[in-house]
Image (cartoon, rainbow, N blue to C red; front, side):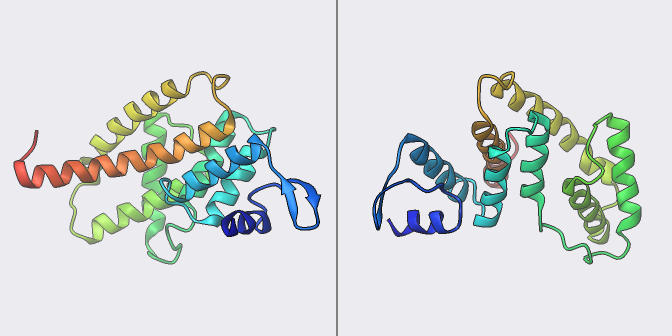
Length: 193
């Protein structure tokens, strides 16, 4: 009960219908919202600020499906990279733009993922990596296939609502990271395969 009261105070859960001074009735929509919050904070590994932003996007009925993805991805990448990390990130930003243009990927210029990738490229370079194309190539292909697969699982958008779309986007992120880590662990023991 204290968690529910906290979610109510934080505005993550809408108030119930008052029945007495300190009591209220809650319906199935409250239970669904509570499940959504718990899923995003536990399995999705998100903090409450990120959950609040995702819920705002889910509740915004004016957002298209593409805008919902942009909002969720913006939350997933927010605060991941300190803009002051690398002074020489400008060149890497240009390379990210070139990669995305060559791939014909229409990604918002303000996408936080662009900034994250630019800092990753600089970090790889500083760690002695000679060829960022060699690093990015397999990830580009994997990302393309996974994005197509994920969108296929979501259907045409009418099959699932914004909450399901947002949750699955977060969970797909967790699945990819988890599966990659499991594969690395297995391959260090048994070799590729």
